[in-house]
Length: 96
Image 1 (tube, rainbow, N blue to C red):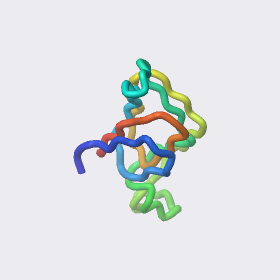
Image 2: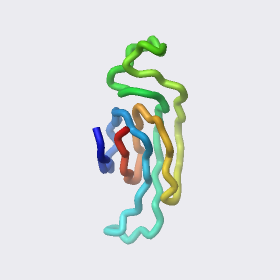
Image 3: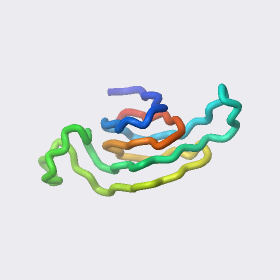
C-alpha cells in the first residue's frame, strides 16, 4: 500500500509504516511541529496481525518498543514501524 495517513487522535494505529513525520498545526497558530507518543512499536508487518511468536514466519515481528517519546521539529522517525499511539500532536504516517 502506498501513501500516508494523517493522524491527530489518540487511538492506537497499526499498519506497516516506513516513517512517521511530525507536522505543525498552522490552523492553531503553531509554527513548530511537536508530538508526544505513548508508544511506537518498531518492527515488520502490521501490529494488528501480531501472533506473539516473533519469528521469521510471523505476520508481524517486533524489534523494539519505545514508550513516552516526545518529538519536536519535523524530523522523520524512520521505520519499519508496526504501530504507534499519540498522546498529542499530529503526524503523517507513510505506508511501507
